[in-house]
Structures are given as C-alpha cells and as structure tokens.
Length: 435
Ligand code: URA
Image 1 (spheres, rainbow, N blue to C red):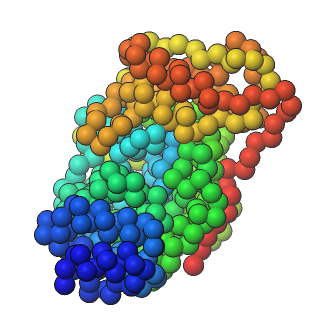
Image 2: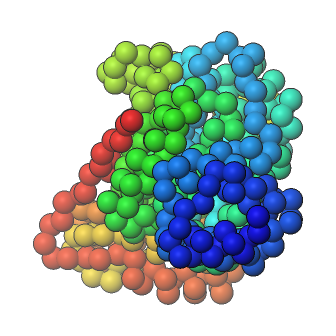
Image 3: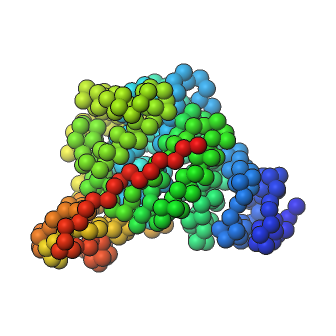
C-alpha cells in the first residue's frame, strides 16, 4: 500500500477500505506518511467527502492513534458537552459544575481559542495557578473526588488529530463535515463517556454558516456516537451574535461566575440551562426538562454549583479566592467606549467581527503558537433588537496598546447594523438532532 495510490483513488472519487484508512492514519501519526501527502489526501476528502463506512474507519483509526481513557472504576454516569466553537461561548464553565452538583460526573476536556473563536482553557487559566494539563492519574482522581474535572486534551489522546488539525488549518481544509465530525468525535469517544451533548453553532461566527450544513454535521456526529454505544444529542444554536456580553478571557470567566452565582445575561443563562437539562436527562438524573431545570436551579440557588467549581479550581492548583472574589481576576489596563454611529435598532451584531476585534486586542490567537493577553476583551452592550442612541456605547473595549485598539476599532466598524425600524431577536436555540 502506498499513500500515493490512496490519494489518487480518493481524488478520482473512489472508495478507501477500512484497513487502508487504518494504515494511512497510523503511518501519518508515526511520521511515515508526509505532511504533503496527507495535505493532498485532506483536500481530496474536502472535495469528494467520505462515505459512511469510510468515515467510520477514519474516526476509529483516529480514536486508536493514542490512549483511550478508562473511567470504568467511576460509579457515576459520565456525560460531557462539546461546542463546535463560537464567540463569547463560555457555557462550559458554569455548566460543568452545575451538572456535577446534580450528581452526573463531567470529565470535561476543552480546547484553546484559535482565530476569532475563544477557548475554555484560556479563560480558566486566567485564575492564578490553575492548571489544565493533567496527567491521566490526576485527571481520574479529581474526577472521582469532585465528579468534575476541567482539563485540556492530553498529548497521548488522539495524537492523530493534533497533527491533522494543524495541517487542515494550514491547507484550507478545516470546514469539511466528515473531517470536523471525525476530529471532534474521536476525541470525545476517547473520554470513555456514557453520554454527550453537542452544541453545534450556526451563523456568522461559526464554522457552519448555513443551517443545512450545521444539521448535516450534527447528524453525522450523532450517528458516529450512536454506532459506538454513546448516546449523543446535538443542539443547533445561533452564533450570529456573541453569546452573553463578554468576549475575551478574564472578563468571560467573571461572566461565567456570575451565572454560577445566579446572575448572568439572559441568552447565556438560557443556553446553560438548556444544555444542562439535556446532560441531566442523558445521565439519568432527571426524567424530563422541567425536573432537570429545577435541579439545576437548586444547585445554583443553594450555592452548591459555585462551591463545586471552587473546589475543582483548588484541586487543579488554582486560587479559590479568585473565584469567590472575581474582582481579583485580571482587568484591562485601559478601557474605551465604542460609540454608535447613529440612533436606531440593532438588527445584527456580527459575532465573527467581534471575535476578530477581540483577537486584534490580544484576547485570541492568529496562530496556534501565539500567546494571549488574559486582561483585554470586549463588553458588548448592544445586541440584536436593542435600541441605541447616536454616540452611546455599543461596546467597551479593554486594551493594552494603541495598535491593537486601532485594529479592533477598524474591524468593529462593520460589526453592528442599525436600522430605523424595530428589529426582533432571532431564536438562540434552533433545533435538536438525535439518533
Ligand atoms: N473542533 C475540533 O475539535 N475539530 C474540528 O475539526 C473543528 C472544531
């Protein structure tokens, strides 16, 4: 078998066999198949797609390219949530402790921000001392003790994805449904889960701009999980405008703590409770959405959810006082208002533009190797449907240097559309996909 034969066959619309795919992924992971050969294969897949059997074999080969966690000694049901990535999407941070406080174990493995989208790990790491790089033994022991762990993906879990994702990023082959589905699901299957809730973002700030594409991605991932005995529910949610008010890192963490303390903006709270209810139902802790919501509300009102977060932060080396007193979290050195150019109603607030502006301020990475500035970010004051007056702030920009600020301002010029006619708010939760 040679890589060239397989590339040519895929290029010409042929079908790859399971053993061929298994060989290709293993050989690539070990460095026997080169980056340029795999880049050609990825482009062939991007254009030709993968059949159901090919996708199955591709996911399986990625899953077994490294270690797979064994969480069988945990007595509780294990459910995780994964988002395909968005702007202001800090849902995991309040959600995971809320669900854990209701008795469902959450082995949460998150990623870092890239491009205009943020990452949960970057936000959590604004807590002084907090570490997300846990070895498998610590991962399991934190999970056993607290029913929750908030970690990054270890080096040994699905190493094929680490290489493939970097290559896709550099070759314009990220937005391919089979490649995204296998990338996400191989990592989630390696977590030894019983259930998984997927938040598939759709809209201006998402990978999937069209609802049909998002639905196909959701169906594909649900199918992959179902075939392997993991119950998966996917929810399509809007990423046309940023979620919540804060976009950045420390400011997003503060907003997350607000939700755990019973506050937070309506859209963020709505999504956290919706996804949390699905997790509790998947985990068998609630029979229906109403019961689940009650349990989540009680966990927040009693302070148990926040307490769970504090204990896990402490177990992972973080300063618990930074959670109980979020004013201790880093703040921007300087802030400035971004004013409305005219009066009217906000018809859209472009999530992608806000995400890019936050990245230009230093809150995100252009390339994987870049570092982020935890202090800077954007507070979005005007969202879809809001009335604004000329000169009033649409947002507050937290910044460090003038050059980042200038770039962010220039991107934000196109972020808001303002009309003289009242505009309605589009629904946040669009539809659900199940097996
Ligand atoms: N997130 C992933 O983990 N992989 C993708 O391919 C896209 C988003």
